[in-house]
Image (cartoon, rainbow, N blue to C red):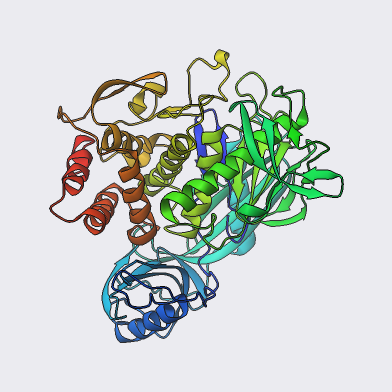
Length: 552
């Protein structure tokens, strides 16, 4: 992943994601014009916030275990309406990225230091930055891991790229190699894996997949006839939306990228779709523009959800649009978000397991991985990885509800539109009872972190459903749901809107790369306190719902 491309993918096990952000993000550009806050005083600009945060870092360096050998870089800035400020940082040790070195500092409206949330507390230094295991040796270990993960498959064009880091996420800080290995399978589709290995012994510490994923109208595959904002160019129209940052959709022409660990020597094309009459697609898969309609519509609705509900201006919060590539690869059963191109890519599916992977909740899920990577950057393994996946399931579902499309009404199933009837189940995941997929966890236990992140996500998905809808049977979007609890309690939901606001604030203000389920409980309670008050019914509901999925 970063600095290689960060992606997420769909598999028959579920929608996967890569969730570790770059440990050396560039300093955020400042200069937003001040606006009046809730108290009538000007809301601090980003530049003012970063300046105040820099002062706080100097004053509280010892408490944050910052030393002269460490550097920090700001990754994200949030300023509340009352002027309270939150700045998220990554850190390096002797110029090496520190996995788990990220932290968020919280400032009062006056700019004074209030508190901090750290991914990993304590001293994050290591005695030496000289590895015993060489970079070529680390590359070989990662290549072996990729072949093992794709046993029985002939891989070609395999390349590995090691990056020396300090790993503070897995016990005491240690020097480690973070090696990304990429290749192509027998169909020419990309496969990739990140392997974290001890730079002194070569022992594998962790590993995870890194491919995770003018007003006109269009006839879509899954959402009926939908409105589209397009751009007129001469006598034709382009499937490009200037009202949403220039987002556009192109045809990948069934080609794939040739990328070596994030450096793409060539990319599958994104040949911009054009149309003569501004009426796009036929609603049939045989028309190549039809899948493009779904992709553009999914991007539009995801943009609108984050903008209208959370006042987030685009995936990165900077007003810049992404782009889509449809018809990628050969019967490619994946869809993924890729940070390196800031784009969504959709396969056509094999026609047996999946149809084209351009459904609305898939788009919302995948692009939400981009939001996570720009904010909490939840590590894609263990419990943090489950929370990363669940975050995309939660927001993908809320995007579907927010779209309010009669042809694809909101429900708490993931990927129900793309799963073919012969697959044996109606959806990839079931948020009301995650264990209905045969693998996911309904309730937290000490072994949840050992599950694949597609399945450990079940605990947070279950929490989200129960917090919004409560327990007991009900029909939602024409689908029978039944939220059960792990402790036998009866819950009354607080609604989808409040769930979304609480989870978004927890993600963007309180969670860090190392957050586990206990930390997610704390983060969402802090968010509920901020939004509704410590004595509120919402705060009590968050606490009770976490207990209902055995997170106490």
